[in-house]
Length: 284
Image 1 (tube, helix red, strand yellow):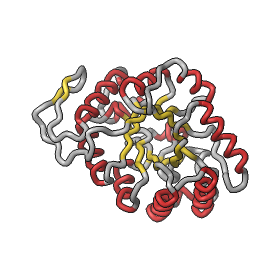
Image 2 (cartoon, one colour; image 1 turned 45 degrees about the vertical axis):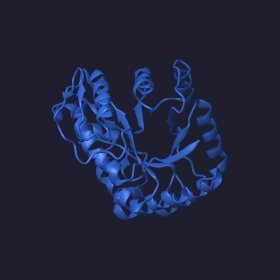
Image 3 (cartoon, one colour; image 1 turned 135 degrees about the vertical axis):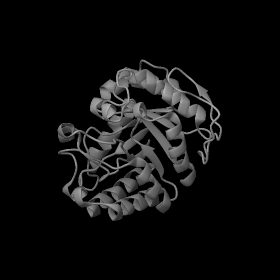
C-alpha cells in the first residue's frame, strides 16, 4: 500500500481536530508539507467548500481551506509529494474553470496533481452559488467527461448533455493530457462512477466490510486505486500494534492507498508520528 496524509489544519471537524490546529497557519502547514515530502509520503489532501451555513457548520465544521490556494503554496515548497483534492464539488463549477485553474496548478507543480471529485451534498451551498441540485449526479458525470476531454488541451472541445463548448483557448493548460481522478462518495453509484470514468475510488464513512462487499460487485480495472482512511486515527509512537492492525484491516478491505490520520496534541507531536509511521512502513 501507499500512504498519504489527511492534512491537519485545513479542515477542522467538530470534536475531531486538535486544539492547536485552531491557531495554526502557514508556518505549521509548511513544516508538515516539507516533512511529508522528505519522508516519502505519497500525497497531502485538501477538501473543498465555498461557504457552510451556520447551522450545518456545527456538524460539518466551518473551516475549509481552499485547495487551489493551499496547493499552489505547497507545490512551491516541495518537490515530489502529490496534491489531492478530497474532493472538489463537480456540481457548482464549469468544467473549463476546473481545467484552467487546476490545469495551471498541475503545470506549476510539475504534474503532481490528483483530482478527487464528488457530486456534492450540501443543498444550501448549491442554492447560494446558483447551481442546480436535483440533477447533480447526471450533471457531475457530464462535467467529469468534459474535464477529462479538455485536460491538457489549449483548444478543448466537448459536446454533452449539460456542457457544450468549442472555439475557446485555454492557456496555460495542464502539463499532461491525462490526470489521475479519484471519485469520492459512499454509494454504489459513486463506485460505478469511479470505475466507469475515473482511475480510483475514495469513499468515506463506510465500514470496511461494506467497502469490501461493494468492490466485489464491480470489475475493478488494472491499476485502479482504492483510497481508504482508518476508522479511527492512531498514534504509531505509543500504539504501533493498533496502527499495524488498522493498516492490515484496510488492506483486507481492498485499499491500495491509505489516507492517514493521527491522534495528536501539538505540531511537534504530529511530526513525531509522521516520522514513526514512515519508519514503520518503510517510506523513502
